[in-house]
Amino acid sequence: MGNLNGKIAVVTGGSRDIGRAISIKLAKEGAKVVVNYFNSESAAKETVEEIKSLGQEAIAVKADVSNLNDIAALKAKVVEVVGAKIDILVNNAGGLFARKTLEEFDEAFYELVMGVNFKSIVFVSQAFEPLMQKGASIINISSQAARDGGGGGSALYSSSKGAVTTFTRAMAKELGPKGIRVNAVCPGLIGTKFHDDFTQDEIREKVAAGTPLRREGNAEEVADLVSYLASDEASFINGNNIDINGGLAFS
Image (cartoon, rainbow, N blue to C red; front, top):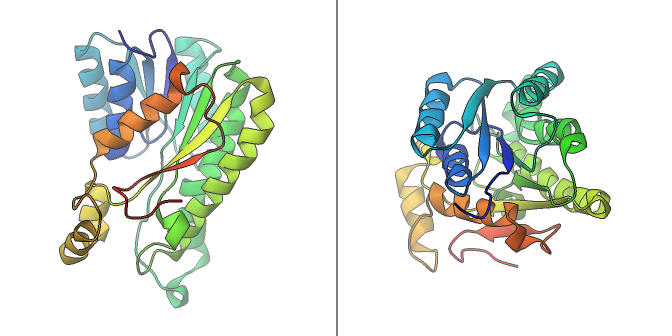
């Protein structure tokens, strides 16, 4: 088995795209995986079945992770099925939902974007941290948009991801003394349904051409980084927001 043999992982938004790749990669490395989903039930079942085909254990649990009652129910289900201890929490759930300018914002859209992208990370982390012991790891999925403000019409999305990067640093300081590491992964242009839905082909081609590696990334490459950060091999990496964008932007 791999570097995560015997560990328990919870992946929010774990049924498709980057979340699916992360769930499968963690399972390949030996983890038992709780695949959280909200709207993508069929995709969640497919992800679980693929994990089981690898000889690993997985369950799918529906929960709106922007809703505190659903978060509590998710935690209760995890404790019921796998026990009162987890080793890995991947806060992956998120979305752009629509490209809107400042004049197009309303309160409902603000609450939707900030709720799924940032509120979820705050309160899922709050719920599951008591189940984590020394050596455990939280990995948040942020974005290159947190650094550069994102593309047109993504101000709220990029701002929510900026909050994720700051929260990651703060939690690394707060939870580090308990032996719990907190890091974030910041993908650039990754070829997923996210960009299929919200980014025009010509813009994707232009961005890829301007990337030193001259291509988009893929979900499996993000999953490989998440898996490494979750492992004991990354035991002294804490409080980092790690870019994965082919060299398009870097610290």
